Structure formats: C-alpha cells, structure tokens
Length: 364
Image (cartoon, rainbow, N blue to C red; front, side, top):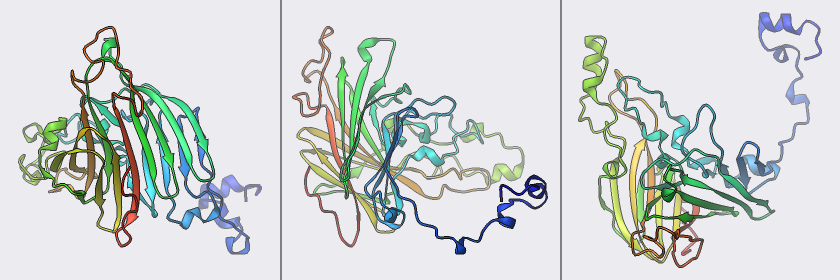
C-alpha cells in the first residue's frame, strides 16, 4: 500500500490507504510477538515481565513498569516508582497517569493529590513531595526466572545538605510476586518515612489486627478538593449545579483508617472483581499502616454531583527519632543499608492473587 503512486492523493480523499489497498490479514500467517523484558537507561524506564513468550498477551503473567528519570515538560515527583500489572489488569497503578491535573479549573485545589508522591508507588520523606532529579541505574539483571532492577537517588535535595536523604530501591520480579526492598542509604537528621502503595482496592484488611477510623487526608496534608467560595460560576445554572462545600465527596482522601503494628504482617487489598493484592511486610520494628481512598478520575465539575470511583492507597510509616543510631550527630550521617542495625528499610512482597485461591506467602 505504501508503494501505491497516488497514495497521498487517495489518503487525503478517503483516509488510510491501507484500508483500501492493504492485504486481508485472514490471508496472512500472523503470529503473536514475544514479550521480552526491556531496559532503556537513556530514557530511565524499564519493563519486566514474568512470561516473555508469545503466550504472555493472554496470560496472567506479572509485569512491572518502573521509571527513575527526571521530567522535562511534564513530571510527577515519583522517582524510582513502579506499576504492577497481573491477571490482565492493573493492580498497582500510578494515580497520576489518568488525572486531569490542570490548575486551576473550576476552582479546583492548586495542589491535586494525583500529582503528589503519595499517589505513586514510592517512598515519601517527611510528607513532602520527592525530588524530581533523575536517579541512577545500579543493575538490570533480567534472568529467565527472576528479573532484578536496582536504583539509587535522592528523595530530598535541599539547600541545607544536612536535610539530604539518599534512597535505594531493588525490585525483583518473580513468577508469582514482586519483592521490593526500599532503603535509606544516607540521612543526617531524623525523618518520617512513608512507603506509599496505590491500588484499586475497595477494602483493606491488616491480617490479625483491626483498623481504626483515621483522618488520613489531614495527616498527609490533603483536605478539601474545591473551595466553593472561589468558584467562578458564570450563570445561575452553574451555581445551583455545584454541590455544597461540605459534600462527602469533596475530599481528596476519604474512608481513612490506621493501625500500629510490630513484626512481620500482611495487608490484603480486596477488589470487587476478585483479583486481590497481598502486601507482605517484613520488619522487626514498630511501624504504622494508614489507608484511604483517593479520587479515581476528575468528574467533580459543574453539573456533576460526585466523583465516581476511588483508588485505595496503603501507607507504611516508620518514624526515626533521636533514639535512632547516629541521629543528632552533626558530623556523622545516618548510614543505613538493608538489614543494618539502623533498620531503616522496607521489605515488601507484592503478591497478586485471585480471591477463590487465596495468597500463598505467609511471611517475609
């Protein structure tokens, strides 16, 4: 079709020329392509697949898409974040990927939650958005059974070097789960670390523990979405269509809950379609699990009364204070690596599973 001499004229009159002069695919021997895992260091993105054969496209295989690059024109503070796909659907999304985050539109808050580090699968330090400086690729070893991606970079880069926090992340893709180790490589001052995991879950359970009601939005700094006294209503119809400022859906985070835990534990994220996620946390120290639900898509505009659908987020918080080894010493930084005495690391196994079969991992 591309060799047809009048293709440009035909295309301008009747559209795609391949539809007129192309070959019927039923006459062709078309095979599904393979699905190799790939890493593009120059673009700072990688895709790891548990099944790299032709059958990948119709299988329940796990796929991890990771990024560690800095944005030029459009970027979210989500360095070293990843998304998880399994059983033919997205399990751990990037909330910002479908978010209409232009500002301001219809009085919307100038700092939407979808832009924040909490809306991505990454480590948040002191409740502040992470640095957008590119991270470094340490290793990309994609074997036939296990794929490993190692990254390193800064979470916070301040003018005061004492506030700098250096992070590392190792993501290992196995046939049935993803093992992720996120650790603090260097920090001089005490900090609060929140490991955020966005999901599509409609309900959360911390196995063996009971979650209590909690104002998650107030904790992480996200309250109301729209402040209605600032809405530029252009007509009485628009003014009456706008729901009141205290509308139950006019909050970034709703249905917040939390519980403090110690030792290894599992958080089960249940979805309405029966494809669930088990987050197995391996830890020996005290931490806190905080959950909530964030808007899935922007529909809270004139004439629309609510925001349909919510993402679920799980935050594992660890607070390091003056009791932490090395803290308070202005000439000595807190240098801590996986399995060190300082214990400033997060070890999590991400296991997608079908509700009728249950999860297999019992402890990390």
